Length: 387
Ligand SMILES: Cc1ncc(COP(=O)(O)O)c(C=O)c1O
Image (cartoon, rainbow, N blue to C red):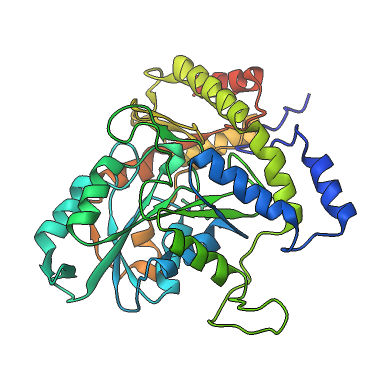
C-alpha cells in the first residue's frame, strides 16, 4: 500500500474560515476597504497587548514598512542575523541600507555576545550615534528574529540598542504567541518589546491568511505612519491627494476574514504544537545520535518549528532528508542557507558565525502541522530511529 504523505507544515482550516470568508464575499467587500481588516487588527492588538496593529499583505511588506518608519536611511548599516529567512534582511536593502551579519546562539536567534562585541570593538560613538570604524557608516538599527518561535535575547538587545542609539526591529513573523514567563519582561510578547515588530500569516505560519502580515509599534505615530504608507499614502479619500510615495501593502477583507477565524484557534494550535514537540523530544532526544533542540525555559514558546539536530557524524543531513522523502513519504527540510553566503550579500561583513555554520549543517526541521496526529508523528519517529 502507498504510504501516506506527511507534509512539513500545512494550514489548519478546521474553524470558521469558510463561514467568515463566505460572509466577506457575500458582502462584496473583498478588497482592502472592508470592516474585517480593522476587526482583525483589533484582535491582534488585543492578543499582543498593543494599542494598535497595522494589517499588511505580507510579513515582508510589514518589515519594509518597519524599516521606513524606523528611519533607516540610505547608506546606513543595520545589524541582522545570518541564520534566518532572507525576507528578514532584504527590506534593509529596500531602503538602500546594508546589513552587517551576526551569528546565532543556542536559541538559533541572533547572538547578543557577538552583536555586543561588534558594537563595542568595531564601532565608535559620536554625538550619540554609532559608526562602524571600518566603513565610517552610521549603524542605525538592528533586526532580531525570533527563530522558529523561540525568543531572541530581548533582555540583552533592549539595553544594547539603547546604549548604541539603535532602533530595535523585531521580526516576530514566526513567533506569534511567544511570550516571557519570567524576569523583567514577564508577560511581554515577542514582537512587542522593541520599537517595532512584525508578524507573518503566510501559509506555513501558526496563523495563516494565505499571505499577510501585521505591524505593531511602541511608538503610536510610527504605527500610523506605517498604515498611511501601506494604503498609498492617501491624504484624502475623495480628491486623490497623496502626501508621500505610498505602497499597496494593505491586507484584503477576504484575508482578514480567514485571519479572524484563525485567531480563534491560535491557543489550541499552540497547545497541539507543544504536545507534538514533547512527543518528538521523548522519542528522539539523546537517541540514535539525535537531539531535539530546546526552546528557552523562561518563555512560553508557540513551538512553531521543531529542530532535529544531527550530533552524530553517522547521519548526513541531505541523505536523511532524501531517504525520508523517497522511502517514507515524509517531508522535512534543512535550516536556511546562511544569508551572508548568498549572492546578494557575499560582500557584507559577518561576525561570530561558528554556531550558525554548525546549526546550518546539522539541523533538520520535522513535520509540525497543527493537524498532524500523534500516530503520524510516531511514523516520523520510527523512520528516524530506523536510520
Ligand atoms: C524570519 C522570517 N522573516 C520574514 C518572513 C516573511 O514573511 P512573509 O512570507 O509573510 O512575507 C518569514 C516568513 O515567510 C520569515 O520566516
